[in-house]
Image (cartoon, rainbow, N blue to C red; front, top):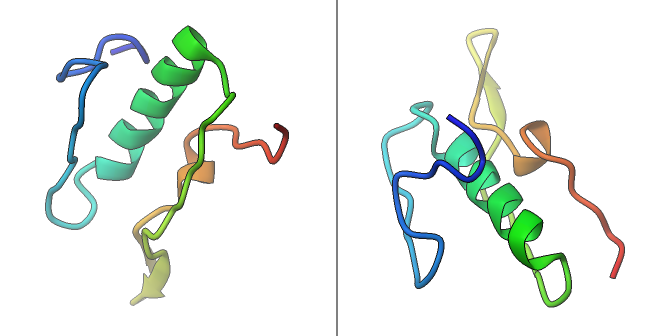
Length: 74
């Protein structure tokens, strides 16, 4: 699946939900990449509130920066 091959429209509002570790952050990163590819970064503001912690030697959750390049520019 590519950044532009998303299971939802790239316009309007979308909420991505699910139980832990099923790919919500990875899907969010793909949607963000598709948006930036089509529209650029101007006016994009990102708040990443997803937790990332270790439990029993396993990392649970992931920050968006693990799946896409985030920039402080603009």
